[in-house]
Image (cartoon, helix red, strand yellow):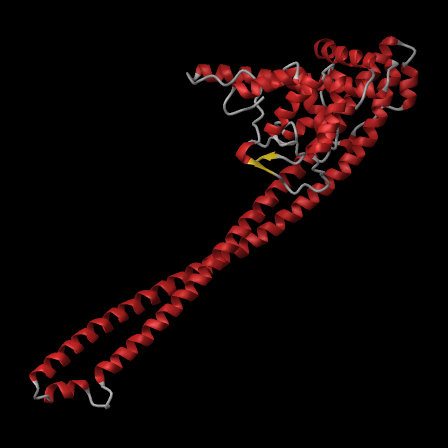
Length: 402
């Protein structure tokens, strides 16, 4: 979103101060249906008293985090189901190709066996009779010409060897055809099982996507009102409060990651293992990147970059920083909103890990490039200070990550 220069200073200050001193309410269980939302009457009653206003603001923040967590969980489920459905379809396509290839090979081997058997029969007939319908063995036994006898004996020997070879070829081709037909039947059975699994996963993905869409719509409706309530309690604007809350929650995410890294490092040191990296490491896209069939997502790299260019001013960044941002997210995702790292689960334009972390920027993080960018900018600001610092880190490690 755009902010004025004076508001940019306010937002940047709020993010830093909020990360240090603002109360961060612990998210309630992710069940939007049971969340008790503050009313405007509560807000108006609290406005005249500073302490009451602060307490009411905390209630509003808790409600925001609860509804965001609910939508984030459902969207994560939808993303995982979509990726699983795509993998099932890929497995089915591979199995279908295998079954088809085996059937073709079995049919070819069967034809080869039949041809060899026909040729063996023809050779047997040749061994028994010559062109005058006389048995060749009779002619050999009654001939009085020694040269003719030797010639005919040689012909018989050659024909016998050829016949035996053709019989062996026919036997081998027959066994091969039988084996390939057995393999083809097993492959077809596997294909049928995978087809059923693919259909089931596709249905699961559709159901999860529908549930996520309903949660997103509900969350957006409540979030708009809750941010407006916060603005009323603090005499600011809803846009300022949304940016402020994003900074606070991203800072909380970073703090939680830091604690997790420290625990992992301590456990590794105790086990005499190599310590893990000291910085957060969302895995970059690279060769593991796939693009799930996420319903509703608009993949528009040029549009995403245009939005990011308009949004970086809120952090005081200019064109030089935007150039670094372009390089960074080209490397990570190609600026594709549906980029998924198949091995780590990192997702979206900024490759958030886990993907659902972007829920603090908006319930529609799974399908909306702008929401992903808003989270990514806040993440870069909190973790590295600027896109160029993040890009420098990205290129300083191998494999690349930031």
